[in-house]
Image 1: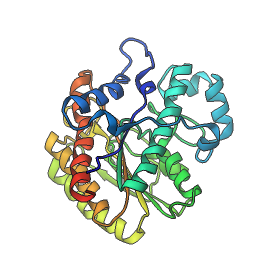
Image 2: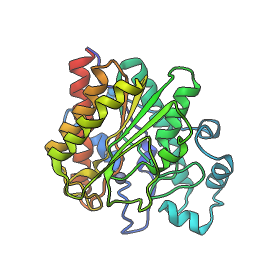
Image 3: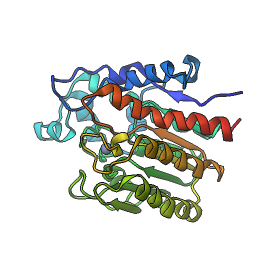
Image 4: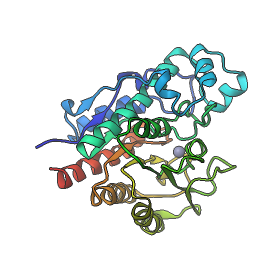
Length: 307
Ligand SMILES: [Zn+2]
């Protein structure tokens, strides 16, 4: 019996941020440990990606932005907007995470389903970083899959609590990519981009309303667009205890969401690559347990549908 392929790189958490910086950089390494501790994964399910190089990144990013990012030539305003102080380690982890989502998608295309222990940096635009997103892994992976000739249409289902504005802008004139974003209307970014479909939800929507919105839009979009693969951003910041998110999902609501999205893909024989997206909590172990849900549900779906 085969098992869910999972992608992780040790550099994901190897960035030292200033004390009290709101981004929980340790969560990626802790997620791997938690998956092993809970028995959801075993060590040989994990594979390590090649970091994305400039050629790969330039499928979705401006070359001048990449040059300035890599060489530490960003302006003070650009650094503020991305939300992280620049460091070589930040660049290395960002390039590795993009490579990780590409590798996750590649594994999904052969196995049917795969999950990443990072990814979902959907606020990164073609030529600037924003909102703790330096490079847009979803956009690069989608563009890579198209450029490789392995797929003709990519659907990005973005269930992070924040709108996938960078991804929407990067693909605004790309008919082969459909961007579907479920997000809280009141959350960042204040000025939303235009996705192929935006489902803006009211503050405190909760489990029932959220799951109803998924059921209203996902089957219809999938049947109409007929994607060859799906990138699923399973942001944990939809949770009621999240410091930033406004949607108030419970643990069980998140599990139901993840299972629903994955099953909608598998029942149509559409390969799906899952990324963890955002999640903000000073209690990082509690946050990590929320990021586990998508791996837990993906593992169950893998065993049920693909074995
Ligand atoms: Zn988010």
